[in-house]
Length: 85
Image (cartoon, rainbow, N blue to C red; front, side, top):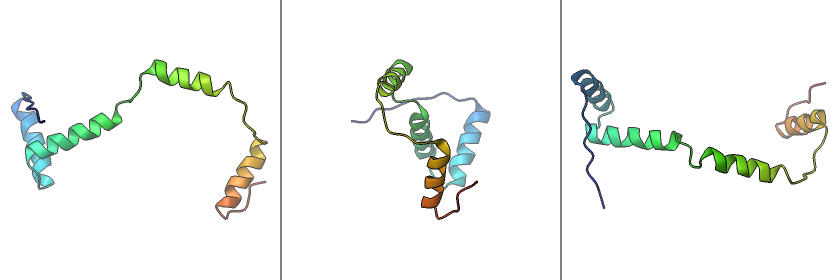
């Protein structure tokens, strides 16, 4: 199902959107749809409370780790670089 969205813009704003769409060889409607998709992707999916709860649950676990110098050396060796001394 599709829905219609009406947005009221001042003339200067409309001309700016029109120029942006024209420069990409798009209709204004297509440009706006794509701009909205980009904006939605930038929005956090979960609320802050959910993210904090996930971090709190994760820190309750114990995972094997190594000395930071050793870990960095192993990572760099995986890239084919010589480790820093």
